[in-house]
Image (cartoon, rainbow, N blue to C red; front, side, top):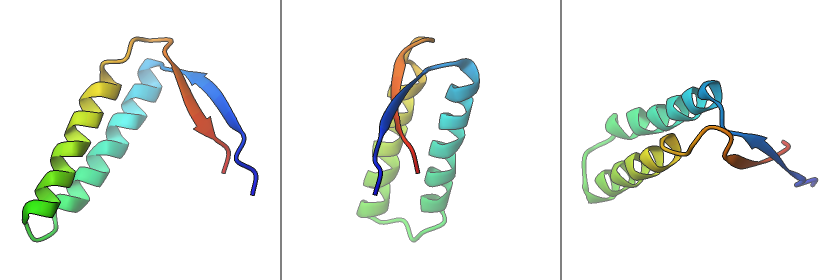
Length: 66
């Protein structure tokens, strides 16, 4: 398996794509039975989303090739 890491800068378009990915994951969890585990995962995703969303333009983001 090739796990080469490469860097791409944060851009407004990339920020939107990442935000949409977080929203998709959160919406999937909201369709589950609401219990402590689901709520903890939603809260964690919201924290990560806020953190990543507030990174400045140009911030280097690591990616791996699939």
